View 1: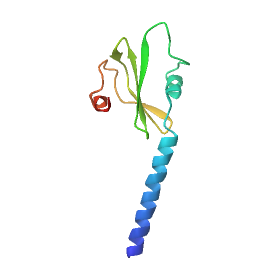
View 2: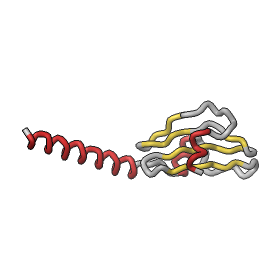
View 3: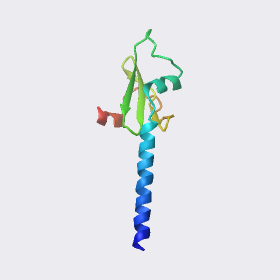
View 4: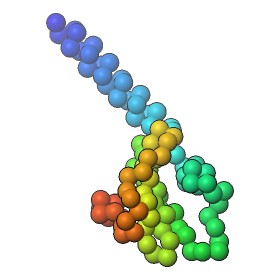
Length: 98
């Protein structure tokens, strides 16, 4: 009975470590985000800044145009998911990481 619990713990731990390593390896880059939004590079005609907050397993990307924040995307496992509606204010939960 004890060996089943130990095997289950080892299997669960190994699976979590594998997911952690996989998510770190597939964490999207800033260049991948630019390709996702359809840009090869940041336009120079207007002042645009891409803010990236890296959490190692995933990242958040927010374009800042004229000091106002746009739509925030979560980049995880090589994909991007919209997590804000472009409220043009800085997401309150990202303030903790600055």
